[in-house]
Every structure is written in C-alpha cells, then in structure tokens.
Length: 211
Image (cartoon, rainbow, N blue to C red):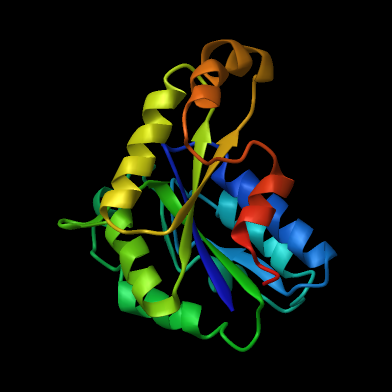
C-alpha cells in the first residue's frame, strides 16, 4: 500500500478537493484508493471534509462509516491542540487505523488539518506526524499551495521545511486564478529549479504509484 500525507501551505488551500480528485482518478484506473482525515475541527453536525472522502470510499466499501474516515471531530474551528480540550487525540490509535488498511488498499491518502506547523499536541505538530508516518509506512508528502499573491514565499517555505526534516515530498500548486498566477508567480517559477506540478496528471506521474 502506498501512503501519502496531504498537507498544505495553510487551511482552505484545496486539500480536500485535491485528495478527492486523486482518489477518483486512481479508482478510475482500477486501483483501490481512498482518503481518510483522522482529525477534523470545526464540526457541528457532520464532518464536511470527511463526508467528501466517505462518498469516495463507499464506491469501494459500501458499508464504510464516517468513523472509518474521521477518528476525531471537534466543534471549535481551531488547531487540534486547541480544539481537543479533553486531550482525546491518540496518534498511536491513528497509526493503528492506517495499518488496518494495509491489505485492503493500493493507495491511502491521509489529509492533515491545516498546514505542517499546525499543533496536534503541545510539542507535536502535523510535521512530526508526517515524519512518523514516513518512518512507519514509507509515506510521502503531497504539499498543496494556493496560487494567490505570496505563493512563492509559501511554496518555498514549505519546500524548505520539508527538506530540512528529510520528508520526501511533492509540490502541487492549486490554480484558482490562472491569469493572475501567470502574471505574478510563474515568471519566477520558470527561472527556478523547483520541481512542482500544476496539473493533476503531472502530480500523479510524480507520485509513481504504478512503479
């Protein structure tokens, strides 16, 4: 089973949308793929992101429940550390849950909450979770960055952080305003040596799922 941890330059950069697109694409090729989001905050009635992933997962496993996709939900729209007032989050439980898919899937995507420096515990961040994930499952990070003004800084910062923590990763720019992107960001990127994807098919190629 190939495992990918999907993180981003911030919250609301399109992680859920990209994860769903990847899963739908992999499934169309006959691969058993799904996304889980172990921790979702800002949940009042039903996990919004989790429901997207559940819909995709039920194409393979009709009996799958939302509890199989989202292990922890919290009403406060904040970091897991802040939202988890009762300190319920157990990362070992999350890793065990991931391991339970080993013989069932070809691809598992794990969507993180927010960016890489979002705290899960006082001294434990999404970045630390990604590192443990790599150690346990040989996972790789998919880092999603939005295309708004400032994206060069956000993309390079994420790339630098992931490199410094020796995390294998793929950079994906989620284009929402292609005209603005071409004007304010693309000129630099074309001159840089940075490897990134702008289209889903290019991201899929870089993931080398079929090798």
